[in-house]
Length: 252
Ligand SMILES: [Zn+2]
Image (cartoon, rainbow, N blue to C red; front, side, top):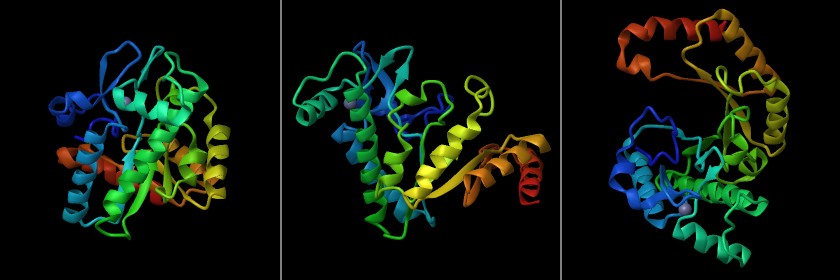
């Protein structure tokens, strides 16, 4: 629902991207991507209003902002919408370059950081105790450095962020990387900024060995929390035993 700026899972349909196509990111070939632009004031207004409503309705301690990011695919990048072009010109006093220059990469990182400030302001307008946790795209994901959410020091430095939730890619491209050093370094940067590190654990961890690896990584990162997110057991009660087994293994 959240315009796919958050929750980039392509398997989950977004009602927002269908109803607000004019606010979607524009890529370097001039095409709209199915991802809202964090610099589009219409998206920001809709998002802030929706999050305020959720904060009123839900009995929660805070919100997790799941992988806020810009589109990037095979050298094509976003966003070149009119708002991004205006904002870039206002910041750098020059036109938004056609290529993904260091200034453009930094502009995208700052745009994500500004979006998180708006997200936190929206929920805290309802209750100042509501916490704000960001889960950046995994560092070992392909193209992570083109996501706009790759500078974890910048994110940890932000007043909008109470904790950073760490997601590690376990399968597919990127999983083969030795990611322990990568994440350990990132966790020490987060801790140095006085922010918490949480480790996000996929609910489909079936082997005891994988669970043990996650617990070891959590210790190395100095993670304050292990978070298990599970959609299947909400939809299908038959997956509950697997979830229970995972939680038991994690607690051991
Ligand atoms: Zn834009």
